[in-house]
Length: 309
Ligand SMILES: Cc1cc2nc3c(=O)[nH]c(=O)nc-3n(C[C@H](O)[C@H](O)[C@H](O)COP(=O)(O)OP(=O)(O)OC[C@H]3O[C@@H](n4cnc5c(N)ncnc54)[C@H](O)[C@@H]3O)c2cc1C
Image: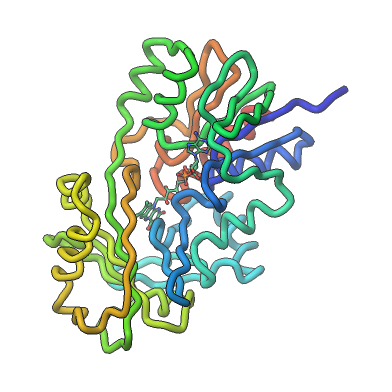
């Protein structure tokens, strides 16, 4: 009997976890991602001879199944535990950069990168490149506004209830500045969560173990990011740097980059761990379902794979 073909759109934590489980159960799995690397929002950027995490900064572990998986990653030195200032319980980071965990998960999986799916019709997904992928079952783990756009371009007709669920999901955006410092005399130890400021988070990536050079990640708050979403990136970067001048002197900055996450954190999520469409062999998952973070994405991928198995 020929193996069932599973196509997964999105090589973030959710898509990769689904892929890992399904491959073990002998499905023929292909994962496609529009990005140049795996990981989605578990993202690390190399620039100016240094590195910085600009998406997820750390994660927590609450469920037994994620703990079991993370214990193995800790043993393989992909992940280590880490204490965030002002937070009581333990968090985890990847000492080589947060994209090390998705890279670890992608080992042995068939992942096609720089492959953006632009249309789905009758068991075939069409990529921007002209490539076509046929499937028996499709898993989509992209941020929901991108899923809705894809459905619109695909003539996929959703039931009213499905529309309501997907339309209720919302994300906070996030502007992220990565700044390499000439020297460090900062008081930023263990990462700092800030309140009542345009900046909500600041950390030195050298402390996490990513780089030898002091290199900051500065995240804007959800409110600031939303109200400055379409503004000039340089202006935003200057404002964010200026707003942490009590911790970082502008003169200290060697060079910096800025990234805009339009869909950073799922602020309004659907209950349950995924949505299975009634009229199509399509499962929609990711951090928009459940707890809305790295662990939530993992649990969503796990649950979809188990449902298919
Ligand atoms: C700035 C920021 C800070 C964060 N901080 C934390 C934190 O501290 N702790 C925490 O737990 N979580 C944090 N998160 C959230 C966490 O990163 C996400 O919850 C998690 O990584 C989501 O994984 P996912 O697989 O659901 O989605 P994603 O990682 O977004 O993966 C979806 C993938 O789909 C791909 N894709 C989309 N459309 C298409 C298409 N048409 N064709 C092909 N591929 C497509 C994308 O390229 C992407 O790789 C943060 C996120 C951001 C952005």
